[in-house]
Figure 1 (cartoon, rainbow, N blue to C red):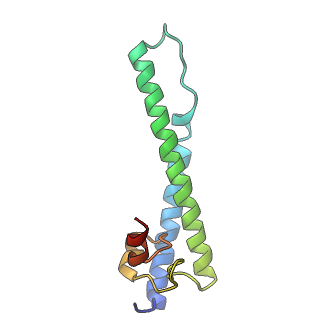
Figure 2 (figure 1 turned 30 degrees about the horizontal axis):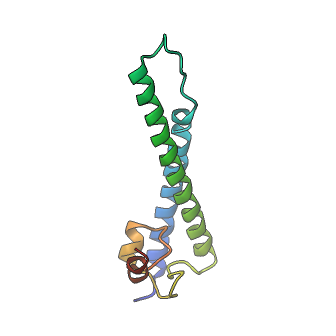
Figure 3 (figure 1 turned 45 degrees about the horizontal axis):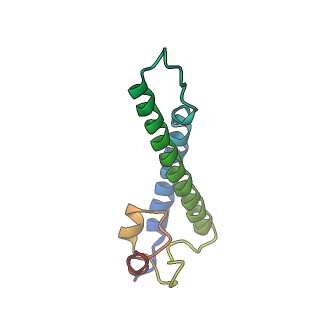
Length: 117
């Protein structure tokens, strides 16, 4: 696999910054959705409460995924600063630009990702 060019690295740096901002915004916006559900039966019917609790659990799961991706983005940005970005953390080979363009926070090349699944 070819090494990334400076232009490609700059483009991926911009992508990582955009993704970082998007994730931070999503985490902030989803904060209210994960608050405890009011169980006042007079205010909300039984089915509505169950639905609200399910939505709360889905929001919690989504926040957890966003936090994990945020951590991956931050690691990728650190690797970029240290000149270690774009290499598979498993085999050490270069990760293709096309793959990084789709998922700039990915730590694995296609071969290692496929093998881990």
